[in-house]
Every structure is written in C-alpha cells, then in structure tokens.
Amino acid sequence: MTDDWDMADAAAYGAGVLRGDKVRFRALAENDLPMLDKWWALPEWAVLQQATVKPSPEGSTAEMFRQWSTNTTPGSAGFSIETLGTGTFIGHVTLYGASMPERAATLAIILAPEETGKGYGTDAVRTAIDYGFLQMGLNRIELRTWAFNKRARNAYSNAGFTEEGRLREVVYFNGTHHDAIVMSVLRSEWETLRQPGALTATNSNSPQLVPDLGKAPQ
Image (cartoon, rainbow, N blue to C red):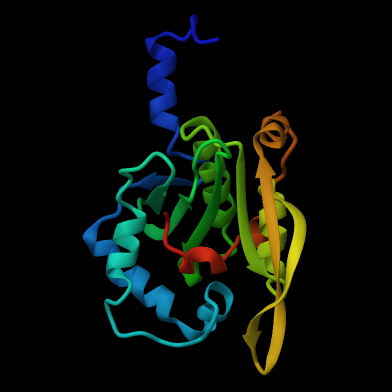
C-alpha cells in the first residue's frame, strides 16, 4: 500500500535509491570512458570478465558503455560507480535484459583493480540489487561467473546471490575448458535478506569483474 507514503518518504527514497553504504551511482560521464576502456583491456582482468584474452584498440569500448548507460528503456539500467567519501570514479554496473512477464535481468559490474578488497564491489552489487527490485520492479536478478573465480563467487554470495547451477566447459583458457557458475537472487529472497542482521559484509571478498559484461543489453 502506498496511501501513507508522503512527500518526505518520497524525497528520502529518491535520495537513497542510488546510494549504498560506501558507493553511489550516477550517470556515465565522457571522462569515465578512458578508465573503463583501460580496465576492460587489462589482460589480467580480461580472464575474469571476458570469454577470451584479446586486447582491443584504445577507445573501442566507448560505444559499448554508452549503450549500457543510456537508461532509455524500462528493462535495463547502467550507472557509473563512485565512492561516497571522495566521489572517486571506481567502476560501472548494469542491469539488463528484463522484459515482461518474467521481469528477470542480468547484472554485470566492472571495478577498478586497485579498488578491490575495500568493500566497494559488494556494496555496489547490493545497491544494484536494491535498485532492480525497488525501482525496476524485477523479480529475479542473475549473473554468471567463471568457476575458477572463487573470490567473486564468495562476494556474490555475501551480497545475497545463490548458486543455482553451472554451464559445463563453456569457456577456454590456458589450454583447458572451464565451467561457468549461474547465480541468482529472487525478490522474495531479497526481502528476507533486507531484515536487520541477515547479511554480513565481507570486505575482503569484493567482486572484481563479471564475465557477462560482454553481452550488450537488449
């Protein structure tokens, strides 16, 4: 029921829906693009975020991130991530692919390598989950990560995601095929997890990069 929701409630919601405990979301800025391009191209992170290690020319990801951040359709949303304390730009997050009647979106995040291990990633993921359920009306948020990326898997678990299966041998690195882990959180689970004390942050397990960033939102 919304009958008792007044202007003060609305203002508080508006001020907080793009804000977590450590980070806030904002619109993509043109001067974010060189850093996103740099992080995307790093070979040591490409193995965690993409299906292959294949550097691309400088500036080649600009249009991709612009597309993910237009925020012109109800089934997708993309934001730059900055720290609350200093306003430092540290990454990008997107929810994409949602449609009726499923209301299921995929989450993907890229974080500056030097900012991992500080709790920013976990807070950004939780903030994106909140946004997806509170503002986009989603019922399910999912992601995929490579099975060998145990740090990311732990971080997503800390943020409320549950492992629900794996895609066997779908990626090829170092002469070997590897599995992808499918994880998800449902609105009903999120509502339970929002209760005080239900989630405990583990700052050392902040997620780094999600492989599904390679798919453009529909």
